[in-house]
Length: 111
Image (tube, rainbow, N blue to C red; front, side, top):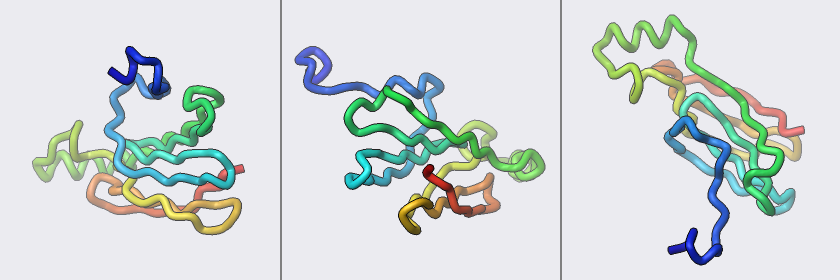
């Protein structure tokens, strides 16, 4: 109904079906950060599909292999699912992902 009434704008930047996990709204700068499977997206709130920025952040290959050897599903469990997006300061966000059952965190510069 929303699409038919033209009252929403779908996000077209992810045609890969990337299993979105967490959101961080930055109203002051007019942007939305989305944590997904192996990716962090930075979107413009005025037009979600304009100037989409994307960071590819997969789990290390050896961690993915260990995960699969442990009997986990390669597609639904052995990836870096971004779970935490937390403002750190005006220029950085603290981000954490599952890292194929070996969690990893880092600071992302938003420049």
